[in-house]
Amino acid sequence: MLIRALLLCAISAARGSEEAASGDVTNDWDTYSYAYYDYAEDTCAFHCPTSYLGDGECDADCNNPACEWDKSDCFHGYGDCYTQADGSDYRGAINQTEDGLACQAWSDQMPQRHDRIHLNYPHGGLGGHNSCRNPDGEARPWCYTTDPDTRWAYCA
Image 1 (cartoon, rainbow, N blue to C red):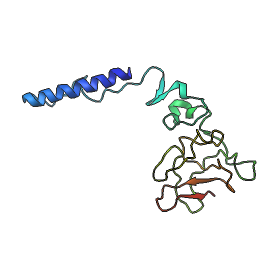
Image 2 (cartoon, rainbow, N blue to C red):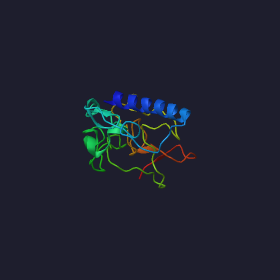
Image 3 (tube, helix red, strand yellow):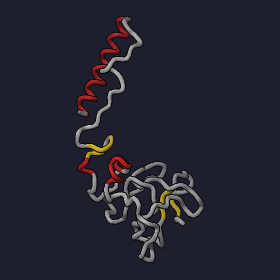
């Protein structure tokens, strides 16, 4: 189905170019030309096939109610407690630093580029969310910030 949507958009663009070149342009919207979006049958949200659900990685496109928060991968609803002294097992939802800076999503590479990703730290609770974590043995949970002048900081 997704291929069909892309093909229809491509046909529409080509048809629009032909109409513009011939001067035969109208302002009517037809069913096949504009805003035809369709999910494939095996997806719960755009860019989230059901095979991504519960696969051990919190996928940003699946971290939503329609996909049940990527099953247990995104730790939705976990409390803010942890048992390890360094907070390496923290899976809560705090997403700002001690100074109140917003945390950058672990799956994002802007504004802070980094290698703290699920592939490199599979047990670190990283992925498509911006909650504080301690994947690499720091003193306590931390995050990269969205402030270009502050790379990372500890969380409250």
